[in-house]
Image 1 (cartoon, rainbow, N blue to C red):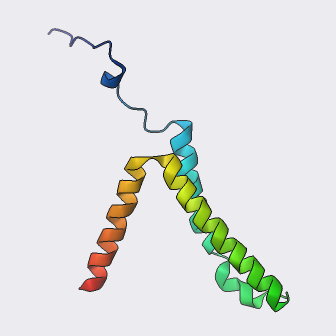
Image 2: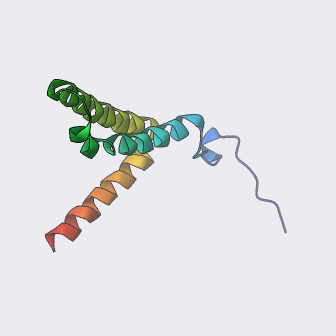
Length: 95
């Protein structure tokens, strides 16, 4: 059986899906979801109202920044996956 001839073009090589940039992107996306977890516990902390509001706002901003930065780092394939998941969620809620 003949061995297929490889092209010298870089485009012919398979893309490495898990390079460090992609891994960092998925890690940031995962950590953004983890930053949302302490928000329901904030009202019960023994802090002043202004400290709780500042902490809550900081957590929301950090979570959003981590999500979008992770999406940029993960690349267009991750963006398509997120867009598809959001579309499926919206279609399911309309029923």
